[in-house]
Length: 123
Image 1 (tube, rainbow, N blue to C red):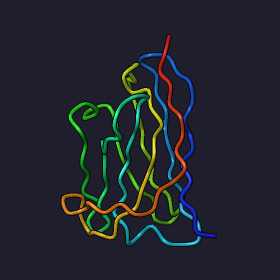
Image 2: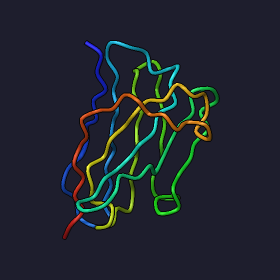
Image 3: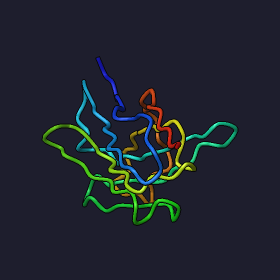
Image 4: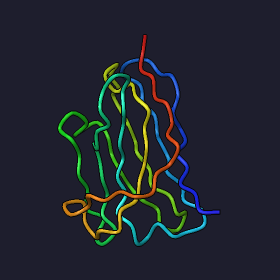
């Protein structure tokens, strides 16, 4: 079965950390550029991070730059998102998605999505 599954979300306090995973089954992530998206209640979905398939180059939205780190382990067929110094405004459902473009700068057609994982940052 072809799946993309996010995990690792939860409820944390401001300043704490979480690591999200995006695991693929039924296909190989190696050939895909992977984007992380999030959608907060009442807001549009936003792409905030990406890792390229070709050279592992990364992209971060300014709001998460310096706090979040995206990485990939092709041997485990998984992409990770380390989130540090979490803020209440990071509260959202987090999704990963695949794009066949080789680089984040050209990845605009994310066509396979996971089901999402909830991240809540609250004191």
